[in-house]
Image 1 (cartoon, rainbow, N blue to C red):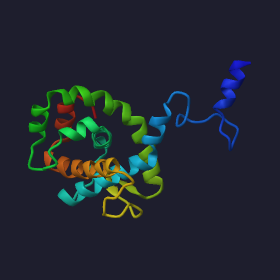
Image 2 (image 1 turned 120 degrees about the vertical axis):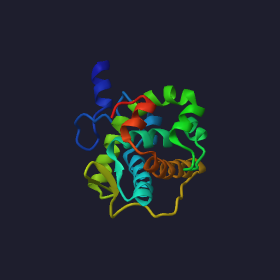
Image 3 (image 1 turned 90 degrees about the vertical axis):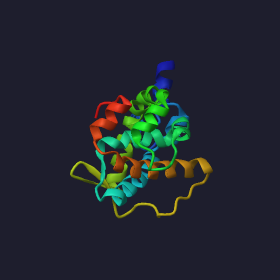
Length: 182
């Protein structure tokens, strides 16, 4: 009896079928509401726009989880100088714990980034061009606005990360310094 009730609680109200991973019993409601595809699409749009503005190229696809994890993690945001003059290596050297803190967060955000990318690509918020993300036709306005100061900080950080990563050079070096594999 309990298993029937348990299974029924996770059926889609529209189709009657089982729900996908989003909103399932394997995900806390806070995670589901915070890491929604639209938010990830917004974060990646901000990062890809500033990356393109900085060096004329799209944001490399492998940076998507890095930009998302750093932007959405308050402790990581707090360590950033928000100055592109600061070298990426200097940031890592000044914050030795950041590599250990970010590794699991970057890996953990990958499924959410996939959903956000799918949403962004199908709604033309982002486009994929030669393995890089470029802004699509339906992105947000240039002005960063949010319902809260935290939401504005997330967007500002994503924009900063796009500019900053455009200046760092080699993608594999950035990934190696963070201890993640592309």
